[in-house]
Length: 107
Image (cartoon, rainbow, N blue to C red):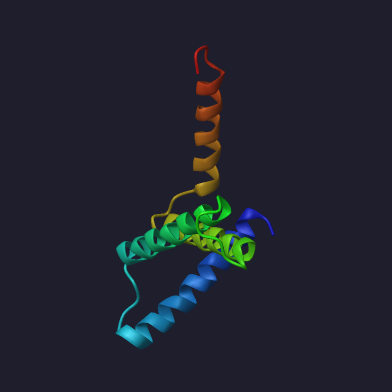
């Protein structure tokens, strides 16, 4: 699956979530609420990273880590879509800037 396909799939899943939220709560989540959900996912990811370091072991650690990374990616894709950010372009520009700064002496 290429990046554009991932973005489109994330968009479809978000649309389905919006339907479920509207049914359950009378409205879909705001962008701020989506961001708060992302923060919760990042917290879950942090616990799994601790697990990889031996601090919070669990039987399904590798599967849970993969799942949480995918959840976080979905949130990033969803937020980028909500704010009309060209994530491919932004990623390319940011990596170019980072690589340039790392190539400088003393970096």
